[in-house]
Amino acid sequence: MAGQSFTYVYLLRSETHPDQVYVGQTSDLRQRLADHNAGKAKHTSKFRPWRLETYLAFSDPAKALEFEKYLKSASGIAFARKRLRSSPLTGTGSEECPS
Image 1 (cartoon, rainbow, N blue to C red):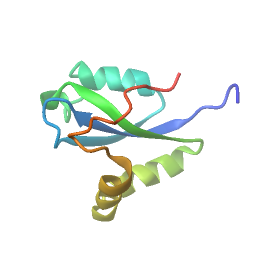
Image 2 (tube, rainbow, N blue to C red):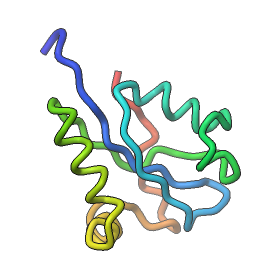
Image 3 (tube, rainbow, N blue to C red):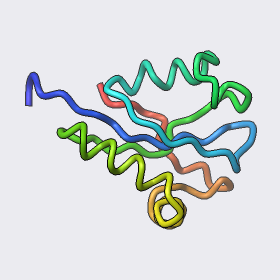
Image 4 (cartoon, rainbow, N blue to C red):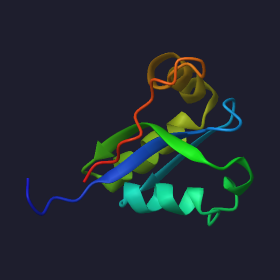
């Protein structure tokens, strides 16, 4: 799918504060994770470093925004806890970003 762009909705977990999780969206996942870990994001700077736990790629940016908002809602938080997040004790989340 050369030339197709995606918007990623991602979940980060703080390595130093495992109970801290952040949900966001971006079109450049590698750069955004680097920005979070460099302290460039106000809401995540005090819980650095972060690791990528889960991400989903959307070809429709509007759908990505809708899903991000859902994950920040009460039912979305419950869904993410049950289906998208690894246990803080197992450390099974992926740290790899898509190319």
